[in-house]
Image (cartoon, rainbow, N blue to C red; front, side):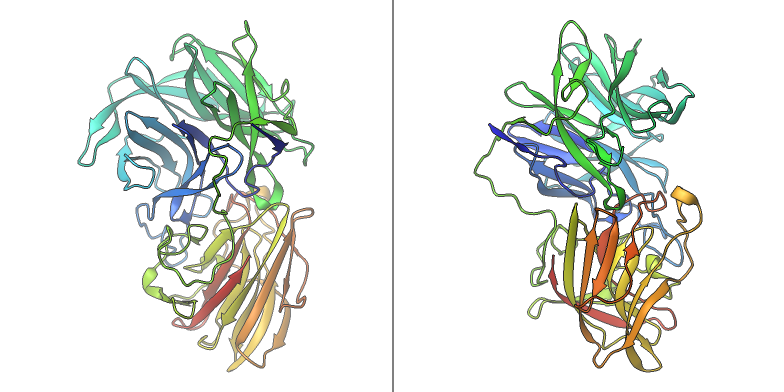
Length: 510
């Protein structure tokens, strides 16, 4: 047993968690949206400490928008809220993609893959799959109206997948109109002979994310339910909700839900779950309050976890992310023909192939999540081969992005610090942003080789940059729905006048 103050558990942007246990190992899947490789699964032996286990896919459907061709993008879209299950020797991952409007089913005999991709007819928003003990299979999904549909297993070349059958699609739960957000984020279980559906919503009377539970003796209802938790841990009045429950080998139950945490994104929170008979409803935390300390079971106490973020000397190409370490993801599907690596010298050289209005249109931005409550990084940039009008450097990528970098103007190199604050769309932002950044500071350089520094403070959601001494303005970060992800460090280059320029990155220190 271990007892410690543990929340939030990853301190990184891992929203919409679903968690299972297979033997002595816990697996958690999370929304990765437009980042690729995507649909990341984490591994743990104690539910507190997590490391990368697998990416389910490198690429989805390679659409022009997923490839950031021209001015198309899938910011705020891509894969959402996967259901992770293990059944008769197979892992199943089911999710929708909000740009293609398809439902994907990936299956594998091993968490390491290979994963076989298939499609499920229909669009099952925030779905959850239940393999019942009588052999029947159900999927629940929806927003405000929660639907249930029966599925079946279908054989494939590599094994099995899920398929539609002739059963009706039924509405089993409806939310009231007195909500800002209707019931969604379903997680479906059979526990002690009863059927449970865990949901998130936001009642106007409460004004923050709230966890609700519905229970029935039949998968088709009728269901009775209630709100079971709207604790905010004293942080920004942001409720903790949406996620799964899992049972330990000793029979204890825990839940992992997420909390909106400002510009860093949505971070998982762990809590014990208990049942108090004769009530059928589970109790989250201490009667709806998340305790600061509670007991956990460590199923592998001597295990050393690989950090989810960290430094990179770029001298290895055997990682899980297109040869990079698994902590790296690209904004959208990368074009690997534009990326060259020198493993001996530890450099990554990225070349442009199109013109961009701004940084969010740039291909091959190499990103890492940022760490709550604050973090910093340093990277060496060689901008010798920039074309006129290019920008290359270190950014903090989200809706209101900011950066420090090198540009080439009239044959000379300049250090620039800039930011972009989206002023339209309110909290919805502007997914198709075509405006340039605002230049905060600029100075001519003696050399195109620079060491750049970025620092983030999540106490007030601000970022500063350095060279490595402080350079430029204090930049305000903000989580908006146009990107719908937390701020990330990014290594970038983009062209505004002439494609074909390149920049090299090395010695990334987190």
